[in-house]
Length: 580
Ligand code: TPP
Image 1 (tube, rainbow, N blue to C red):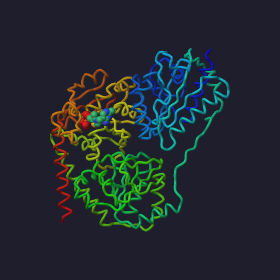
Image 2 (tube, rainbow, N blue to C red):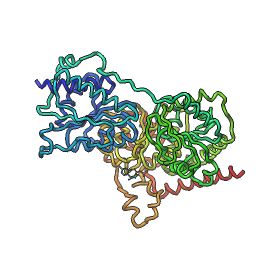
Image 3 (spheres, rainbow, N blue to C red):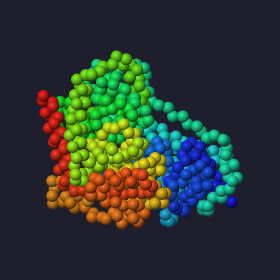
Image 4 (cartoon, rainbow, N blue to C red):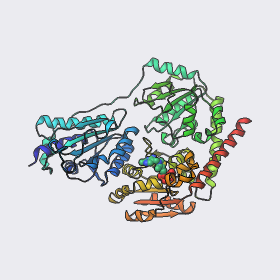
């Protein structure tokens, strides 16, 4: 009977379940056996097996992001632990709560040439919000309470602002197989409820601070609200009310969750990236004040506007108390829950300012830009941007659109415009990696369906291993691979002028036939050549269970040319309007 080990691990797992951590992504290994078996035995814990730790960690990240709750990860000792690093880093920067549990050799077997032993202490550095080297298992009442306390605290730290990953390292001595019986759960049930119930509050300001902010803003006519990545239920309604009160347009990033849904779109500007590409136009639309919510938006032209116009007063509101200002131009940091901030200013703004020329100009310019960009929707040839125009029509209510990094997120910014459909748009924008995107999307698909991922060919290649989860767990997902045979983004950058080295160092064509891989994972594979085929297969894949991969082959040269032509048309049309 391995009672010390069994009861200690069972107490930890039971507490995790009680504080709401009910999903764990497990990778196989020997040292992690105590947790793997206890978790599989716990009646309320859902175990998701994922063999490759790099994919497993991204799978957990996608799941946690979509749930807005912590998800646990479990792996054995050695390089398994190191393979979690990319996802831990992404989770840290994108504020996603993860509880990383790693099994380790006991202290006497460290740094003495024992197999599969590496230094796991603080292995994720500052990318883990909290690190704990756990005590060796013991079944005393005190140590069972210690195990419970650590589990509750791990979830609390992961969830408290800013949310992020925590790492607990568990030394285990052999024998490693726990002896779980019905009695085990009774023995560790110290209390019916959680051992520790943690309440986490929201940040707010004093009444006078709200009053001062309102008075400051009420004096300024030329203001804009900017929303980057943000996924708080209720924020869309609150910020659109604030926009109405102040008569400020909202420049809404595709990840702000403001472009889609039932809230008012009157003030939502979705084509600002194309509008602001022309410096002359941008300088005629300069605001005096900006209120910024969420992460920094994807748009480069918006970033440049904020960076190079120091006269703009930039107010950055962050409910999680970070420092999200890559422009280094913020004038005010406001640490207040974003919904509370909007609601309180709306309450103060009884006298609404409406119908200013400022807001109307932005609305008209946006309309012109949109109409011009939507011309791309008439394109007969396969054009990357049109994927998102088509998806706005094809995606059903309550779908999740997962967007890959590189061109897909930029095309979503330009071509995925406002609609009344409830569509959640998700991406890994903490550090913009092209790694782990397939796994993150598949993790998200375990939480909500239908899920459609749009991804570039290099990014798809990067995480082909991730597809195994779809086969093993019978997941339902549609993956649209935009295959321009290499890194399309680089054709837009100054590197594109380096003809001698461009293809070898940046373009990097792989000439891979993805069909074989998709079939290996028992997915349905379609290559589309026309928009009719595209529509047919997207609709069919959403209505049918299983993994579907739809590949669309495009040309990098054509792509850059078509984007530039569209941006030129937008500048021309808006320029003519503004000169009138
Ligand atoms: N490695 C990682 C893990 N993340 C990165 N962001 C990069 C490298 C640098 N990088 C950014 S975009 C890109 C690379 C290599 C090319 C992506 O190509 P693809 O996924 O085919 O998308 P496309 O640019 O064609 O839209």
